[in-house]
Image 1: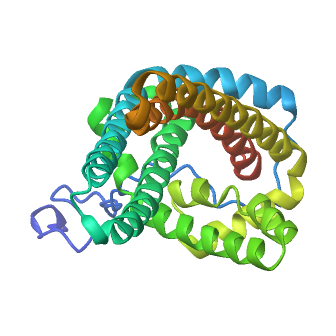
Image 2: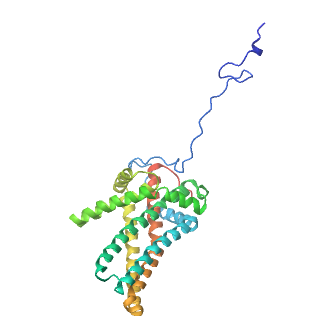
Image 3: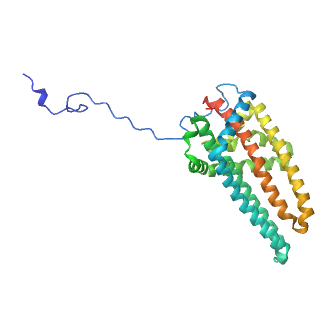
Length: 292
């Protein structure tokens, strides 16, 4: 008679002799785990302008929440740059710097370049939490802190990508304006791709391929950008005229503050429209669905 019942369990068996299932490793959480790598403009479906319009409504809805709060914070940082420029300009106007005024001017120009890189990177980095909220639902990002953390985690790759694009476009403009404009169009999605998880080189490549295939949708985004930029220029001109009439020699204070406020307000429109177009193209490539 067998005494198997009192034998120690063999390998892969529990104490009752039943075979044990091997433990599966727990998957690591990745906010973009559902983001299939875009197929270099291979495409899953062909998006239309109707898709873009629908997504603009959804992006605008997602914006009115934690993303808006972080947006305000970003432009508060921008205000510090504006305030610094106003103070330095005012001190310079009073002749405090004497013969060094020219160097102060070059210094302010350098500060404005740094300001542009930082602001571009921070605004574009918000595409990271936006994409996550659109694909996985608003609850996937934990409030203002979650939006800020998601955006800041991609800020450096976005900044590097932005600088590379600026250099390429700048070189194109220097040699001949048209190549620079073409390069700017083909690479206009680069910062978005960097925000949603690609490294700078991949972001440039993805943008180039997507722009070639979805040029009509991107031209629509460019048209909106040009229109809103025109409004910003007109608003700046009105602000300048009022500032000169009221503040006289200190008009630069009103001009700086007016331009900052107009850009902060109308920049929202550019961000929402371009974000909707970029997400429409990206999800068309990856096959993901947007939760409306």
